[in-house]
Image 1: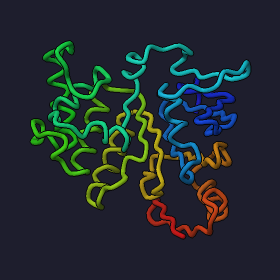
Image 2: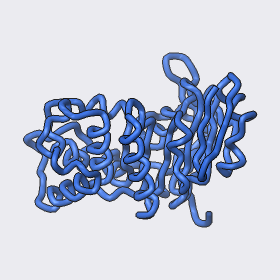
Image 3: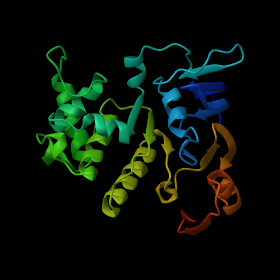
Length: 261
């Protein structure tokens, strides 16, 4: 890939509750580059994407930096316009009495639902309807989020994530608790995002979620990157066994991988 990175992290360290969750991590991602981030629970995957979205701030160091879209300083609302975020944690926050349409529209304001001070325009309403339609959940627009199935709610969150036409999709464990048809629908959405030219950054435990368009895999262990490279080089039984601390078996079929232990 040529050109400057749209996300550049250098020597990033994060400490939480006295424990280092990211340890001197450096990572560059360029526009149109699709990346999967994998690793065991507690490896630092979610913390890494939260650093990218400025939900978490690293420790200051003279030799560290976080540059997003060419700038080291962002107002969060402006940054959110460039990033579409979907996570299990966000779904939990959105499981409310707000209707699906309000959850999508509130993506413009980085809020959960709408309040009296949110000024919703006709153009926003049209975009929200279009995104709900793309995800196949327009018929659920007026349904309360807490009444939806996990798969339906995840589609609403994908609509919310794309309502402001972001350049980057940050997807953190977004298939957890989904059944097989819902996972298939989710993968199809990822493929569409890639074909639309959005950069995909995917955090996952499920290797089958790594669509063909994702060509790069980053492996974390105990807050450090232990592998970063082309998917077929990184996804090996030996390396995965090291990352997860147990014997891992791997299979590939039609360009998709599955792992078990």
